[in-house]
Length: 80
Image (tube, rainbow, N blue to C red; front, side):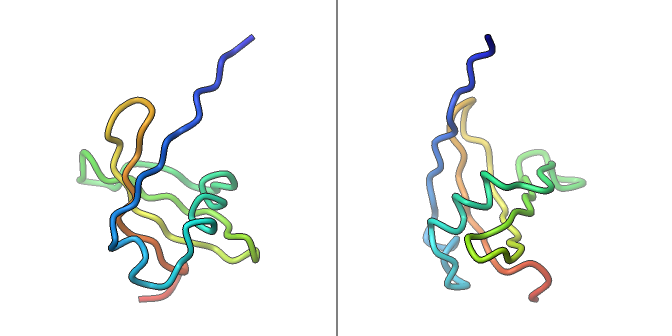
């Protein structure tokens, strides 16, 4: 049986700049559609996931260690 380690998510204040709720960010991590390193960046990851209302979120985060990630940006996907 494979052991799955739950990610610990920490948040910078900037993650809430666009009024996205913490629960919606966590939900997007559970229902991620895309999750990869940003091209040309060695420590920034882009995640596209679904919030609790079914909307797409764009989330940027760093991996701190094998169990912890740091979310520093979240906004509705497609909004500039």
